[in-house]
Structure formats: C-alpha cells, structure tokens
Image 1 (tube, rainbow, N blue to C red):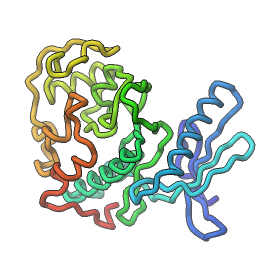
Image 2 (image 1 turned 60 degrees about the vertical axis):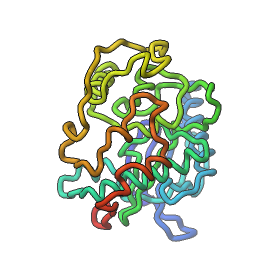
Image 3 (image 1 turned 45 degrees about the horizontal axis):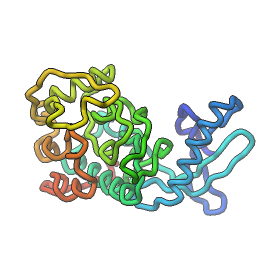
Image 4 (image 1 turned 90 degrees about the horizontal axis):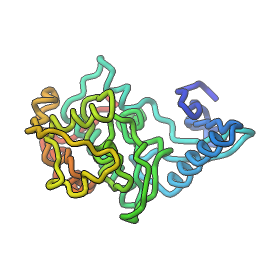
Length: 282
C-alpha cells in the first residue's frame, strides 16, 4: 500500500503496487462491519459491483482486476486512475475548451452505450464517478448502485443518484424507469426535490398529463404552473452552442430521452470543433 486516496461512506480507497505485475492499482476496501442491517446492505453493494464489473470490459469503464475478503473487509482492486472529472472541473488553473468538453461527453456516452447494450443501468453517474488516468482516458466508475434491467414492468428504487443528477421521473418517485436516468443532463443545484423540479421546468417547460401520460399517477407528483421554458444557451452562456442542444440532450418526458447510441450520432459532440482530450488537461 502506497497512500490513501479517498475515504468513502462505505470504505476507503488506497493507491497500491501489485507485486506480481509491478503495476500501480487502486484498492477499494469496503468495511462490512458487524451490525446485521448495515452488513447486509454493504455486502449487497459490494457483490453487485463485483458481479457487474466482472462482465463489463470497455476502454471507458473502470476495470475490476481482483476482489478478495479479509476479516470484516471486502477489497476490490481496480485500474489506478489519477483523478476525477469533478476535480478537473473545479481546477481553476485548467481551461477546458469546447473540444475538451465534447471529448468528455463523447467517451462518457460511449461507456454508457456499452453498459446499456449489456442491460446495465449505472444509476449514479456524476463527475466524481468519471475518473481520469492522467493520459487523456476517462472511465466511468463506482457501480455500487448499478442494476441489471430489461423487463419494462420491473420495479426499482427511486432513491439513486445524487439529487442534482436526478431525472424528472426519479424526482417524481417513479419506480419503473430505463436508460433515461443515466442520460439525463444535470441542471443547477436544487436544495430539495421540489426545488430541483422547479429549476428543471423553468428551463425546459413544465410537463402535463397530455405531454407525459401517466405523470399524475407518479408517487410524488405535484402540479406545476406552466413555464414557457428557457434556452439552455441562455442559462449556460459560457458553454457555447456547439455543446448544448436542449432539444436532444434534455428531455423532460422519459420516452423522448435519447439513447446513448443516438446521442453519440445526433448530438453536437460529433460536430466541429471536433472532440479532443489534451494530455495535459486530463
């Protein structure tokens, strides 16, 4: 073990050297604990992540190299990644160009396309879980909340993803959903579920039962006044029109949300200026 990297709510992540291969790896040590409820819940998270990542192999998905148990801990060994996208975004010394941003979007979409084609929902996609290796490679990580899907009638929990990244159907308490929960474009940070919905609808316009059949039957449905909507270019003026496209990347109605495959082809990420990840940026 070389150094501690992060301390998460269910364990710790360490930088280590694999003595067999002489390579640097990351070890996520999950503390199972002794209280039965917590122990069972954490075990489920660990087992779910192990099971799914053993079946997923893609350049933009974190690689699970090994997993083992010791006493009250479960340890997962991953590809070592230097930092995450959240750190990069907040680093004021770095200037992300439109080409850099488009590259981040494109490789994230390619990773999502792969897991969705393998019937897996990530359900916790955010900048903290997009890791960079320092050489321009971005990988989706932290599959603790990921879930296999396929049956349209299967019921899931709506309590996934950090609130700021909740899609409208999750904020309304939907228990059946699809890839739209991974594809949703996050908006400004609301301080409650209701406030988050308000911010979304002020930007995109509020849905009705006519535009979203079944909306009023969702568990946390609240009626909103009619908002006309605002172009995303006016809200995120610094991003530029080459990145934002509110008619394609942000759909309030789940059934209209683009798939990752469609987004890779039809959104501005493949238009000039073409995507580029500079080595000194990521």
